[in-house]
Length: 380
Image (cartoon, rainbow, N blue to C red; front, top):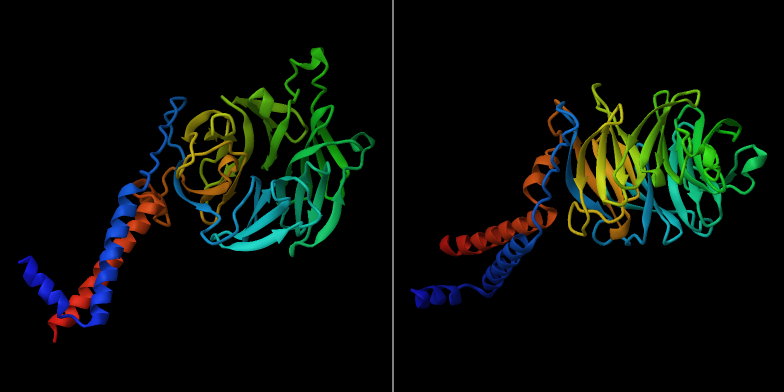
């Protein structure tokens, strides 16, 4: 029988033999890729702190796309309606990607040294970048043009060390300062200081204060509240509009970036915080109670290495994670309680990794090419 098949194959015209050979290579290569690819990342179990329905995450893929320049050390993220901004501290630039993934160039070449955290003020048309190298906050316009330095109008900030930054879109800017006194400055767009939160951590009498900060990395506005990732104190603090401490949430490791997961059609909101020590995404409810964790240490799909920041796109229900140690940005699909995944990506991500999908697609293409070559032979 083998001899008969070999004779039939030799009877094929050369182009069809080449096509059939390519089909075999595609099938074997695709099958090998699918079989050797890492297994899909399992959903983290919901924490026992609550029995209420919670938001769920599913790993989708990572950036940059194949063929785009690699990232060196992505540490900060910001989003607007069109772009994802990534502070690449190792390269001294802010990379810009379309939210669909393709690379869209660089910002701050020759101006930035060690860009760290980002905030996009869409109404003002500005991008705020904290630069640890120069100890400053730099401003850029919609086209990436440099607008100069942003500095709060107070004498005590002449030697400041800005780190986290946020803009509420209505005129307020919050910046964490990690100089001698660790604090948060709330200003208007002109830099006029409206409020200062934080006491001197060197004062032993202040260490029991609810507003004693130790390397506050992240800051974010949510309605009338200000959330602060108080990293070295392993907690997230929530302040009211007058600077009063409303509540706090304990984090097992080191709280870095945070993002608010708002459902598109109303409902319960959650907060995503990256824990750089445990390499996880921590989900908190609106009161600060931990409800779930995702990720874990590692370099394969859906695992993290010292993540530093997160940003959420409500239009696509996608969570972007600065996976700093792995020099990439991960994309996770977010599904809120009572919702179904609108894109279908979450369910696919539960079943297959991108490598498995690529392998299956290659094998299927090989089958199609092979059937086409043999079909034309039979029809003669």
